Image (cartoon, rainbow over all chains, first blue to last red; front, side, top):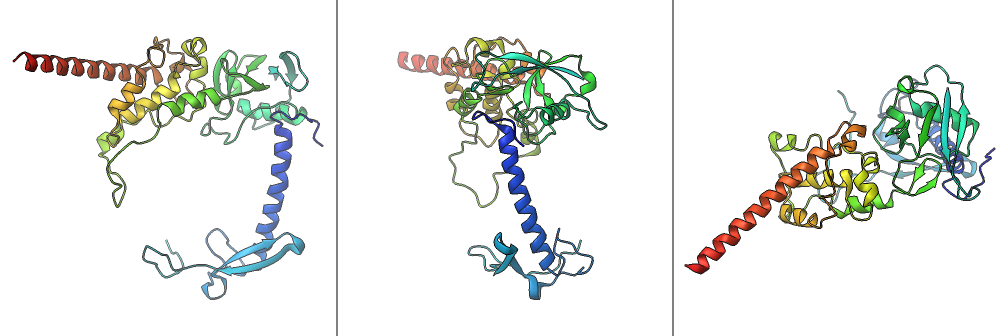
Length: 91
Length: 246
């Protein structure tokens, strides 16, 4: 409960709004990550430990209503510089 | 731990006042900002700026027991109680510990704090030798927290005209840059009597800088460059006269 009702530099209100947004982003991350049955960079799953470019070279889109997910392709054709083939990064 | 904190909310307060807090700290509370966030948990009406909590963003600069500094890199164990916290002096208070930095940034912008180079942009980066790059050490690290400028008596006296230590150090940061081509323009920009020469090497700026930088030295170097420029102009003018006489 925010006690501060001031209109001037009300950081209590700003932080409450930020928390609201953080929860939403966390939900988006959680749902998209659960659906993504592979590992890729920082998205690292024990049950799907390999990168899967056949099925998951795609952007995840999250919609608040019903936690719906949609996907759109990753554009791999740059306009001005040479492209390189997607492949697992091994260091 | 006991605190005495400057409070002012223009919505409700006619005048600013000092409010006392006695807050119980927890294990792991090491920095002043940790204690301030404990206080904010108890009283959410206390306003302060903060962000990175590690001395990189420059948001939580304030006057701590009479000396400007960043709350996030000030150790609680170094502070005498009650810890007296006030907004940075010399700038208008918006609320509590939050000051209006508009004037500070106007001065900063007035020195054109960006590279001026009239050559066509190269394919890759504009390169610099390691020696030339080293000339920027101690200058580029400024985080624009405002601790130096608001501790400067010359700024308090002439806030509208004196650029202040933070702005002047950034002016020198670009004068010292081998890739910059605007030396004359930058020196000319600081010609008005109140912009540069109000610095009398009081050195409060050096004393308070949380990044351990030395604005006073940078300002002295600008004055050296101004002197060199003036001497060159005089020599050139003399040559000009001699040529005329011939």
